[in-house]
Image (cartoon, rainbow, N blue to C red; front, side):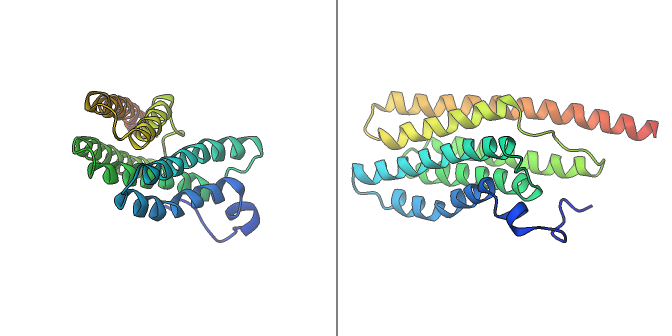
Length: 199
């Protein structure tokens, strides 16, 4: 089964749309962010890194709004947007382990969650079904993640109790999202198997 076909792509209509360009920009700024944060020597470096994450988070919200409002939803965009999201979240989480060791918990849960969703999504395709877009709890988790990482970058000298509280809050919403997506996939698999037996 093909997830999408490039045979009939119109570059202007299907590839070089504003939402897709924004997703590509989010991916391209990751090496810049990583170079700055992993070699940070001053508050200014942290502020610049925080600014890049803020920009990334805003473009993440904008590309979806623009895609829906101006009918620029494409098959490439459906693939590119979540890839940009996951790469960005992973890059931020891993980079901050250098400053906050507790971030390893976040990295582990994030990787397990994304692998679960990737494998579950692929298995669902075998039944010609897929999850119908991001759910509210996924969006809330992503918003909390970006806000929390922005705080960690902007206030690296804040009391450790506050910083680790922020990490704990992020971990809570990530786990909540993981559990609720797990439930969604469970019901989707259950429905898919039921339909297969009835066919």
